[in-house]
Image (cartoon, rainbow, N blue to C red; front, side, top):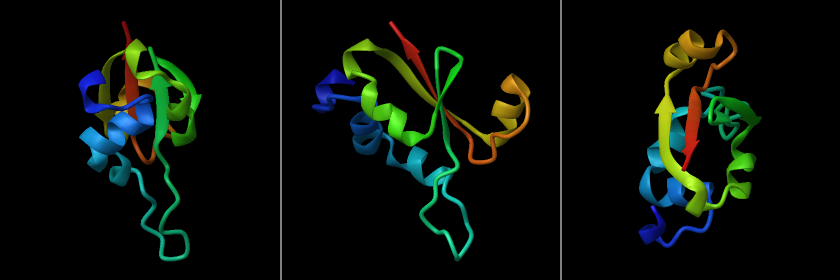
Length: 89
């Protein structure tokens, strides 16, 4: 991931896996750009997409997208937009 030229997790995802960001978009015509994605770091909930900017790329081992169903099985309900799961080194 460091070879992507990204400095943080959001830059890496935007450059390498932009479809992760589109999966969690709310489909309501009144709020088309609201993201329902949640971010987890090492199985701990951090918050929304803005939290990705504070995670340096050097500390990341892997980035995965989990669907709403997968996230619900792992952590329970309220993961409508899915989850971006990051693991650190």
